[in-house]
Amino acid sequence: MTFYNLGLIGYPISASVSPQIHSAALKEAGLKGEYKLYPIAPDDIQGLKDLLAKVRSGELQGLNVTIPHKQNVIPLMDELSDTAKIIGAVNTIVLKDSKLIGDNTDAPGFSNDLQNLLGQKELRNQNALILGSGGAARAVTYALLNTGWHITIATRHADIKQAKTLIKDYETHNAQYAAKLSNIELKAESLSPHLPTLSLIVNTTPVGMKSHHAGTPWPKTLPFLDNAALYDLIYTPTKTQLMKDAAQTKLPTRNGLGMLIGQALLSFEIWTGKKVPVEKIALE
Ligand code: NAP
Image (cartoon, rainbow, N blue to C red; front, side, top):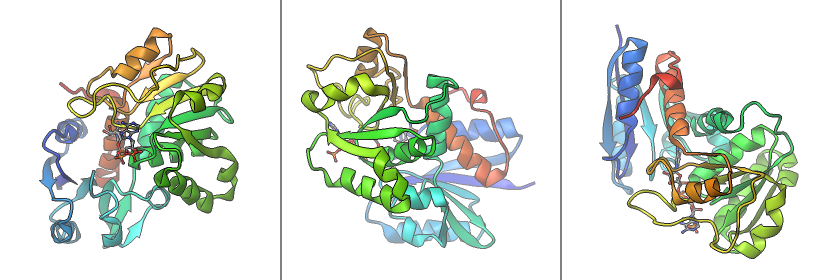
């Protein structure tokens, strides 16, 4: 029976709950193995190469990748999945036919969990607002584009390069996306006219995350309208200030724990071939 040596590359990662998720998944799937943390400093490319050599040799069966290495590992892969290519980030590494494959399960992890917030409603051609334009925003954008949404990306700076690059990359991938993507400044005057048209707001900024950034990314003077649902990618705390404020206006809200578990279980399936239902993973 294969013993699955799995793990996570990132920095810092000591607070990661991934070992808990994957240990529970191994148990649920009836497999033997362990999931270890591999902290590798941001500029330690040799450290990355050494660890990847262990995947090539079969010593490790799979790795997850998180900040700050989701882009750093790309030139070290033999192939990227289409999803990893378009998102421009790798969160899952596996050896297949002697090739190191970089994949990304963040987008399907988000899509699957979003259904728990929105139900099975037909959402094509509806409007979503994404707060932030970093790595997580790229995965969320991809997931929403794939399911037919129109997307406005709101960033705190008027002419942010990151948002423009994101939009340009997706338009290059598929010219039809040009009509579906726009960006605005994350401030009351810019957002206000958009609010009545929105069905979904997604927070991909770290604002509101425990011990990182207090407060909320939403402009103080802008009231919520109750026509949209709110998905916050943050999962600690379980209710961010943004979620609490939105719930006061009766917006349905959901935090990012389901996405976190969902993306982990999709990685687990890539490595082991075993599907574990999200409901089977209970975190303490
Ligand atoms: P990132 O690449 O650093 O991007 C963060 C984005 O937030 C950037 O666009 C940044 O804009 C913006 N931002 C930062 N501070 C802001 C502020 N005070 N006001 C407005 N915008 C601000 O980080 P990431 O990898 O995308 O992760 C973002 C969050 O998503 C984190 O909290 C992370 O834990 C969470 N996440 C959750 C999951 C999950 O499975 N639930 C998965 C991935 C990420 P600037 O360029 O202006 O700084």
